[in-house]
Length: 358
Image (cartoon, rainbow, N blue to C red):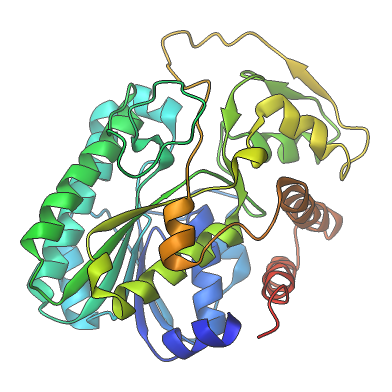
């Protein structure tokens, strides 16, 4: 696996939108280690703490900070860089925030995707594009079986709807660019956990920030079930998809789910209790959710058999291992007084890569 990835990305030009975000930072670190030449576009540093800023990634990387809604700036960067691979992760990713700023959420997630597609269409160079959307693009019927790629898209909240809208745009452009030099794939991942996530209103970051200070974490939706999975499992899926777009032309325009097996779907409360195996004497308190106007699905599962069949991808880590790796990262972060983040994250990546013999 490691040689396979290095052979495909070493020396290649890779554009990453949202490279300072949680998943974007891990993707940037991995590609940097593989020897890729990286250009990243993000709106900002995503506040402080910032995993990306703390990593101090050097080498073949250049960062630009602007909104993807600014088409001329985006087109200028793309026309000059002419990437071989593109990973689109930029967007507004918080459900609660989408209720507060629905208009901005739709513009960012839908119009931002449109601008990227149009800029790449005009580039007139062979490249392989992975559009990262969400598991929440599906019309959620609270069903026990996992959603597959043929299920209807939908969305009861602005975030989910904006991502589903983006997918409709992506689908239209994939047909429009069918005979162009751009090949694209769509990635729909579940709830991703791992070190370096400092976002608000997310289970793991909320737990780590509270427990790191010896405080009690407040749990609002204890019975909600999600497809939890490790960040590097998901990033590996994105990398493998991009390579397969190059190898298999018939995958152009195809969507893939990236999620754990059905046995690995746990409730919020399950995750909190399982965390106690790696972080002793944790404290939590279940509170009543006062945001009644905010709709979030109680049950969400993915069927990732298509990724297994066509990409030979599946989660390498089980939830117990994912939590162990995640909590170890945060423990080391607090233990080292928020220093040595680069060393901690590189070792985390190396440990994951060592799961493969080559």
